[in-house]
Structures are given as structure tokens and as C-alpha cells.
Length: 192
Image 1: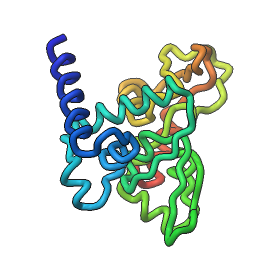
Image 2: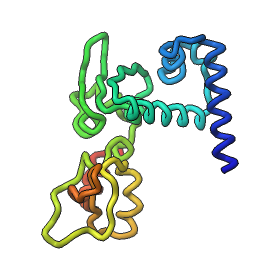
Image 3: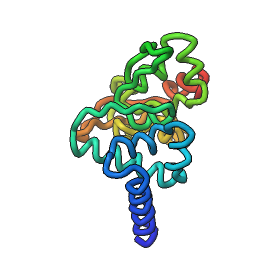
């Protein structure tokens, strides 16, 4: 409990610092913190990785609670993959590819997009629902994960036991499965 209150205090202090720097304009503050503005903005809004992740978690929580569309601009592709339902990657003012993080990670439109994503591990960018397969006739898998689970988090389960892993939808119903073969196929694509 103590670490939770310390974390909450750190987030609160970071928010107060942002208020001092940017005033009451939440767009300016969030843009500075989450989109890595210019060098001056970056210096003023520098946050340690823990606070940054907590603020991203809070952003995700608020977006789910408010159920509003949010257009978010960032130059950090890992941040985009973490926060976005849909991503548009631009070059020279034009959209080069638009889609879900999984669509972009699994099928880059061209060499520019592939190079842009070079440092993003595929298994960290896609969720169980993105790569699940239909259930086999062999029965219900003994292990399950939520559809929103990153494939990277499922990897240790597959290494421990190669049997299929069930994928649960938002209502908790079995929607499909992931096999060791499917994860190996993704890993062979190069950016596991």
C-alpha cells in the first residue's frame, strides 16, 4: 500500500509541475508530456519512465471512462502502439499507412513503414485477439488469456507448455485460441 501512495504522490507532484509550466491548458501539457515536443518542451516536461508510464496508464483509463475519440500526436512509435486503437503514420505531410497497431505491425505497407517499425518487437505490439485462430475440435484449452493480452506476455506460457491457449472476449467467453506454432510464425517474421 505504501508504494501505491508513493506512486500516487509522484503522479500528483508531476501534475502540479505541469500546471506550473503550462497553466490550465490540458492540451498543451499532455502534448508536452506525451508527444515529446521540441527540445525546450522536452526539457521542461521531462518525466522519469515510471511517472511517464503511470501518466499513460491514466490517459488510457480516462479514455475508456470518457468513451471519446481522442486524436493524439506523438513521435514515439512505442507510445503510439501502447495508447492507440488506430494509428496513422505520416511522411512529408501525407498518410503512408493507417490501421490498428496489429495491422501495421503485421503488414507494413512499404519499406518506409518497415524501417519505421524496425525497433518495435512484433510480439510487444499485438494482442491475443489480433492473432487468435478458431478453436480446434479437441476441447476447451486449459489455460486462457484475455483478448487484450499482449502476445509478448503470453510467450512464457507457450514456452512452459506448448498446448493451445484460449482467448477470452470482453464478456469472458472463449473466442479463439493461440498456438505455439502461431507465435513461432510471428517470431520468424523478424521482429519478435
